[in-house]
Length: 192
Image (cartoon, rainbow, N blue to C red; front, top):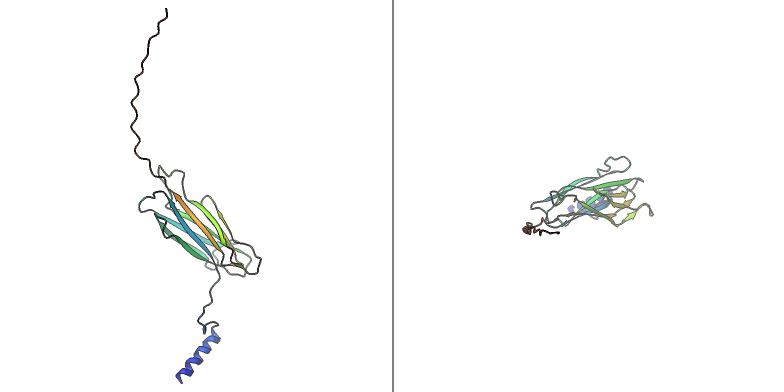
């Protein structure tokens, strides 16, 4: 009798929650941003590079679907090698999710880092799929102060790869000693 009741319970659960009897769960549609960190030259000991990713509905500027507002960090060697974030999409609207990726601290400063900051690279490495087919593509652009990724709501499983590079210049060693000045010898000229 217990076996029959258990079997009936599994069948009932399968009717009430589609996919429950097979053990599968419905996964929300997402796109992906992969952030990579490159550190060139000797970063200061203990340096921490803080990155913020904020995604909003492009039309309203407001977060949609609880879209994304994440802050994470990389160490002085650029570890972890990459951080992958899932950006929800709703597959029903004709809008876009706009994501801004910005390094907020850790970029080079000081006398040998003047004029240097975070350098951004950005590329869409997979367009995923579009529902309906033929919908707009995901785009990615690197600007001077950040990278911007745009995912259409109609697209799922698109992947944008963002690379943030910091270049540090090793300070020069001590200046070589100045050469002594040669004495100035003036020879008189006689006319006459």
